[in-house]
Image (cartoon, rainbow over the protein chains, first blue to last red):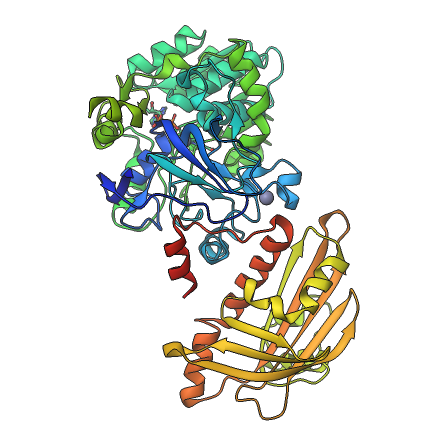
Amino acid sequence: MRALTWHGKHDVRVDTVDDPEILNPRDAIIKVTSTAICGSDLHLYDGYIPTMQAGDILGHEFMGEVVETGPQSTLKKGQRVVVPFTISCGSCYHCGKHQYSACDNSNPADNQDIADTLYGQPMAGLFGYSHMTGGYAGGQAEYVRVPFSDVGPIVIPDGVEDDKVLFLSDILPTGWQAAENAEIEPGDTVAVWGCGPVGLFCVQSAFLMGAERVIAIDHFPQRLEMAAKFGAETINYEDSQTYEALMEMTGGIGPDACIDAVGLEAHGLFVDNVWDQIKASTFLGTDRAHSIRQAILACRKGGRVSMPAVYGGFVDKFPLGAFMQKGLTLKTGQTHVQHYLPGLLTAVLEDKIDTTFLISHRLGLEQAPDGYRMFHDHQNEVTKVVLKPGLDRIAS
Amino acid sequence: MAAPHDDAPITASKRTEKTAQAAENITEPKGSSLVGQSVTINRPRHELYAKWRDFSGFPNFMENIERVEMIDDVTSHWAVKGPGGSTIEWDAVVTEDQPDRLIAWSSAEGADVPNSGRVEFRDAGERGTIVSATILYDPPAGIIGKLIAKMFQREPALQARRDLRRFKQLMETGEIATSARTARALEEEAA
Ligand SMILES: NC(=O)c1ccc[n+]([C@@H]2O[C@H](COP(=O)([O-])OP(=O)(O)OC[C@H]3O[C@@H](n4cnc5c(N)ncnc54)[C@H](O)[C@@H]3O)[C@@H](O)[C@H]2O)c1
Ligand SMILES: [Zn+2]
Ligand SMILES: [Zn+2]
């Protein structure tokens, strides 16, 4: 089959590799019909995530048709499914508590050692996201082996187009969980750093959960415009000072809840960012964390900070004093996708949440390297790239 | 003497003399190097005990064990992978057996690699069962030392932890997680 493989910083290629096979009783093989490139993939593309190996197949946002099933799979050939990016067994203690991204069993035992050392305990396996999270081949490919297929994938009713449901695999539940973690109360003002796909779903979710005002922060006019369309007020941090603006816009109080949907590659010539970047590029290894620092400073006393953004390692100059003195709460984590799927599928089918607005580009799988370059270099115009292996089949 | 007010398990001790205490817990200790690991498994005690009591199932989750034959209820014959396709073999006997609670075993006289172990099963309420394994072995010098290094891979504690985690995967999910994509890749991993 053909698959998008990682070979190093800014080097991804479409290679011919062996087709996946059923290896465990609960496996299924999915023929991919749509798969998206995620902001998290850019962290891999930029070489920020350790434990990648040349030839790894990327992609954790995908859906497709069931073509093969193991004896314990509950799926049936021909069904269309969206697959969560978190791989979860459904039977461990954490899965029982719906903490699916903390699954004990989906990360192969040999891969758990690294996370033991770095994080204290290993997390769930993820598709296409380095060997620390399992080393599983991802979905930017013609076919994928999906373990625990009786727990993860959700079956999509006939007649619903891919584009409408694809984002159930990651960014929609991620935005939703981030808003839930912000513990929004009616009348609240919620500030969201980053108007990428995750931030934009945070905006929609926050309003659905009763926020009175949402303030969205970014520097790309087109992305800010999308946030505005959903009713958010906006701050372009290249034109305005974010902290000062937030304080003025909230009458000197600060936002009740702050969501960091930027992550370890925060842009901008802020002093702390430049320092972080020098350290990262000289392998002193600290994440760029401007947005979470600012979120903590801006947040009102006793407020909530929610951090869907991904961080991988250590952070310098974390405003621990502000965090403690103001009595803030911080909630974060990889998304427990399976927990949100049924409810969010219903919301999408009932048009309560808009998903397709996000897609700016649809490409064949063969053009995936172009897709990465575009998404990386032109974030203003390129909001979301969806790869459709079927487009190549039509072209050839 | 144990230090007062330190409830940490002996296996987490920074003091080597404490391994002697662990040895006392094994009914017929063989060896002086200690490996201890615990894992919580979301299954009832009796199920885990029963699975473990049949040593012939070890190769399913213990990476370096080729096969274990149960000769009778207490005696077993072990074959473990060595370097260059070689195999190290020994007999072991069960030295203590408390159904649903505890199993201890020890290599018989004359084993190249004297070793012994003990696994305990303790209730953990809604979380299932805490399984604690303690293994004592003599890391020998020379050629056998190399065999042993291979047998336990780089670090015995690491190997024990991986094996226990595979046991947990098998008991909780019915399978052992792998990120291999093809049967061939899976075989190569196991080799
Ligand atoms: N928790 C999870 O399970 C999960 C799942 C998916 C994605 N993520 C993470 O969420 C984050 C966002 O993902 P995405 O797909 O939306 O990424 P993206 O790269 O498309 O969007 C990030 C946005 O942040 C903006 N930004 C950069 N610096 C900023 C700053 N200093 N202040 C305000 N805005 C700034 C960028 O201009 C961009 O629009 C990433 O870190 C990603 O890894 C987490
Ligand atoms: Zn993603
Ligand atoms: Zn689980």
